[in-house]
Image 1 (cartoon, rainbow, N blue to C red):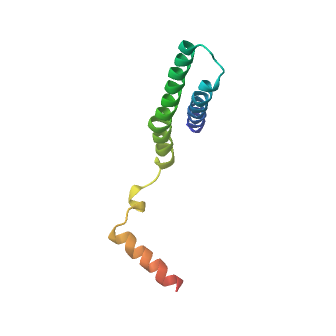
Image 2: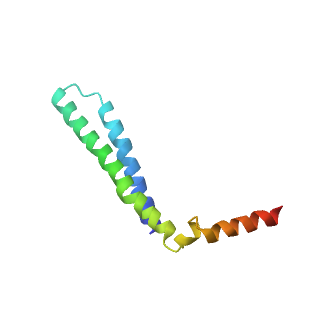
Image 3: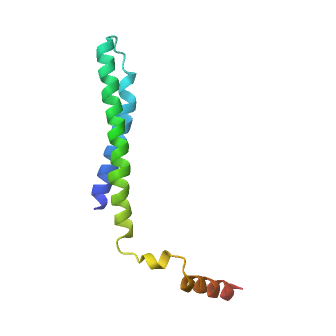
Length: 90
C-alpha cells in the first residue's frame, strides 16, 4: 500500500509539472500552441484531482486504519486524563 501511494503521489506531481512545462515550448503555429495549452491544462487538472481524490484519501486510510478514533476525541474521560497528567507534572 505504501508503495502504491508513493507511485500515485509521484505520478500526480509529475503530471502537474509536465502540465506547467508544456506551454513553454517555442511553437510558432497557433493551432498547435492551442492544443498544447489544452493538453497542459488537462495534465494539471488530472494531477490535482488524482492528488486530492485518490492519493490523500488512500494516505489517510493507510495512516488511520489501526487507530482508535475515540483516543483522539475530546470527551470527558480524555479531559480527566489530561488534567491528571498535567497535575502530575506540577
